[in-house]
Image 1: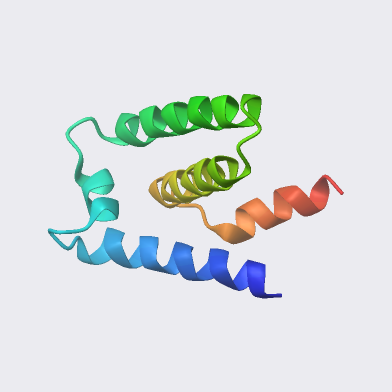
Image 2 (image 1 turned 60 degrees about the horizontal axis):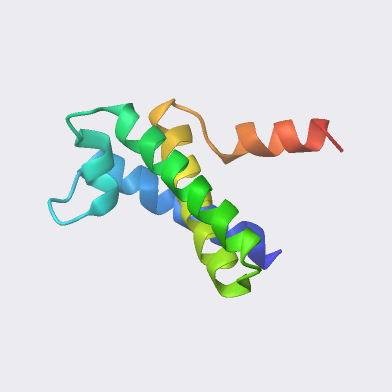
Length: 96
């Protein structure tokens, strides 16, 4: 299941950036931002608005782009909260 592998890989990179905090990493900057977790929450809100507008315009390329931004920032938030993809997968499986 290649799609799941990509999510696992992205989450692994996020966890690595959280641990190593490289100076030139956007992901690391989210973990050290002066606003704390609010920085990620604001980005999620911003990306969600951009997704809604892309959907309204029926712009498939932009829908995919903004959806990826939302998933990325959601994964950062899960990591910040000490959660991981298994928490997300369990919740989704329970909803089937």
